[in-house]
Image (cartoon, rainbow, N blue to C red):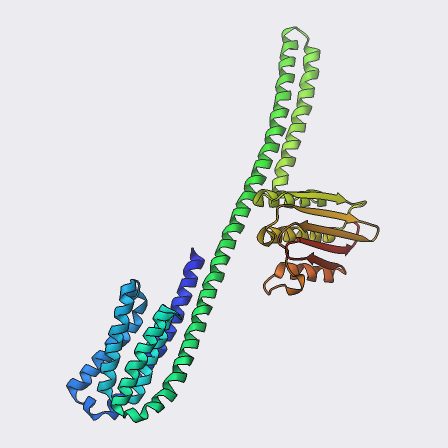
Length: 391
């Protein structure tokens, strides 16, 4: 929610920059018109001119609220056109013809879009602009209006269209980022829940089985005491004490697993695969064939590579099955991760795919190599080869 609000604030700030720039232009044109037109230097004509310019500018600033209803868009276009026409006639400034109408054209394209409605609005504004221009000059000078107005309209239209598309692309990208954040949060929640359930089962089995054994031994000791056999009862009590110590040790080991990850590669990989399968529902077969323990540094690279590969399958592959195979010979460790998803072109990895780039960099730094085999509709096979470093 906070990210969406930040994105919306960013867009609103961009609009404010446009309105501020437009307002500065309006103020400048107002001052120029008053200075150059003696009639506006009198109180009432000047006051009317300034009031109309203020209303015109205020409507610009409130356009996003005004056009919430479709009918208001039509009223906004007509109202602003009438104001612009009157203001230009009062100013007797040809520069106003292009400044006011071009701003309105850009703004209208922004909320109507490039379609027949937008084309009609542009034609309407251009017709009024031409009328204002001819009233100041003559019909014979229309060619000069055409030579100025058409290039300006094209520039304004292209600018607004490009800006609008950029804003829409940013909003879509932010929406995707929000969805990804929600997905990651769900995966984390599922992982934590699964880990808690696993540890709860281990603690339950450890304690329930151990305590059940203790109860049976104590009942037996009680029976021997009742039958006047204290020596046998004492032996059973000694056994019960050993059982209690064993149960306590098992419980401590289970609790310790909550705080520390297993140092064994197989356990770590099975945990990653379990998290992936439970989060996505995609089955993943696993095969590990190692003849000797490997160094912790290599182990971390393998775990990160498998985790990143499974994450890519979850996000992009749309697969129904997957597999992880880790094998080794005397000199080289090979990690193979496969899926039957939609595939992609490995030679056209888009910018922003830092996971694959990170794996390539880690492989290079550790004298290894990464190979990605994939085709559209034929799944993906990732093969990471590393030199073996034993413990």
